[in-house]
Amino acid sequence: MRSPLLDRRGAVAAAGADEGVAWHYGDPTAEQRALARGAAVVDQSHLGVVTVTGPDRLSWLHSITSQHLTGLEPRTSTETLVLDPHGHVEHAAGVVDDGVTTWLVTERPAELAGWLDKMRFMMRVEVADVTADWAALGEPVRAESAEGEPLAWSDPWPTTAPGSTRYGPADAEHPGAQRPWRLVLVPRAGLADAVRQREASGWVVAGTWAAEALRVEALRPRASHEVDDRTIPHEVDWLRTAVHLTKGCYRGQETVARVHNLGRPPRRLTLAHLDGSGHLLPEVGAAVRLGERSVGVVTSVARHHELGPVALAVLKRSTDPGAELTVDCDGGAVAATQEVVVDPEGVSTDRPAARGPVARGLRPR
Image (tube, rainbow, N blue to C red; front, side):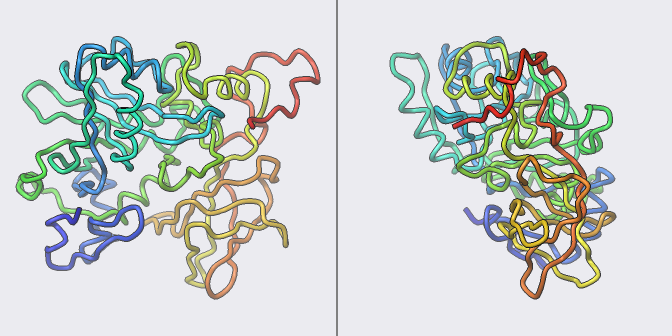
């Protein structure tokens, strides 16, 4: 769907996963600075919204996804993953319930709604893709919505949830702790009015250039970028907010438990600081190399207003975290240094003690 905000003067359309909204409105650096200081709104109306209604909605979603959702209080945000039988990530969704309906904010709403609808069986639930009626606005706010306010999903990243674990930095030391973010759900027909209300309070409108730069800085995985058909949540540190380790069985749970308890994720997310002297920027999917050998791929790229050119990349876990890498670009390769996200040892902070060498080298199928 094409956002009406693209008709604004100076708006430059985004592409790829962000198609349909603005990449920026003429001054991406100023927009990014405004967002970083908490004074900007970002059009996120390209995201999808799926609703689940009915008395069994939370217990049913609990049983088929990775998060503990039974008893989720109204207007309390969390996130969940849909995994395939081998534990690979298929869908990610922000979750918030209003007491009657569970709202899922996701990037592939038609596919997620279709899969959920096939899983209903005899449960008292109804699934609907309501993307045509509801849109999301991104705000630099870390707060749940109150009664009487529009419903919002407050991003839990990077706080390690009860029953979860982490492979990356401690919560208080994590760069994502400095990135408040929530998505406010508004009627799609009222999207422009909702933006004007925020502008009247002194905020500016920022594009996805700004939002993505702060997401990359926060080491925050995104399904359309950091996930491929082999991704398990451990590789991108998604256990900390989206996976409950003791809630019981669900599709893909065996791999989650096996890698957490005995194995090591085969790959790891890293933040790459790119040499900007040549003014080259890689494309998503560009090869990351150690010497002549490919050791991973770029998954997200950003120009940060303070850090300069940066990227998230998924590398082979064994890649030396101190090694200087190169990244393929159109026009030549650029040098990159690593900032560790997922521990190269592949061990979570609460990993059970190994019982012997049998615990070494186990990997998901």
